[in-house]
Length: 272
Image 1 (spheres, rainbow, N blue to C red):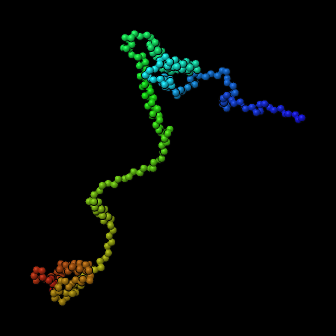
Image 2 (cartoon, one colour):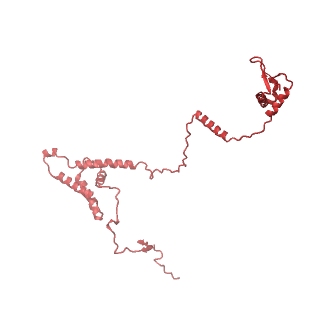
């Protein structure tokens, strides 16, 4: 028979997890001198947000009519909850203790014997508590309805898109046509001030034309005024010839003769 090798019992055992990690080092056991401040632990009870919420929970749990509350049973259950919270060393709000005192007062008033004549006139000790419970129930139902609505960031995500760069649109001024024409005329006037002029030599000379006219009047006879002009020379030739005749009249070298108004004009050279 072959010998059986011993099996390490701790090899297959699960490695013990550390109690906590402090500055990267594992703490395997809870320190005996560990101090926990009173405010280090804070418990939120979502089911009970106050003494009225607790009472409403106890009433609805047992299907009790809110207008006919068995104060004795509800007080017993409420005090059981208060004692449970005190046993686990949780700090109760003062309003829980005030509600416990109020329930005890209502219970004691209902246990006291009352005369028949006073019973009809005295108000039910539970009336104020019932009114507060009904008002709280309405506000709680409204809060639950609002919480059920879609909420941005929780149920609805609003997409965000950067808006394009806004460009301001330049409004054109309201200008009348007459103002545009005046402005255009002013621009043309300014342009004329800077216009360059090129002076060229006359193709026809007034002095040379004066000599030509005297040459045609050598015979001493009358020559019709219109025959001294040449149509082929154009407007410039007509102007030069007319200026030449006027200069000859001014110098008393020729004379103009007209027999009657609107009659033909004749030209002849003056005798020396």
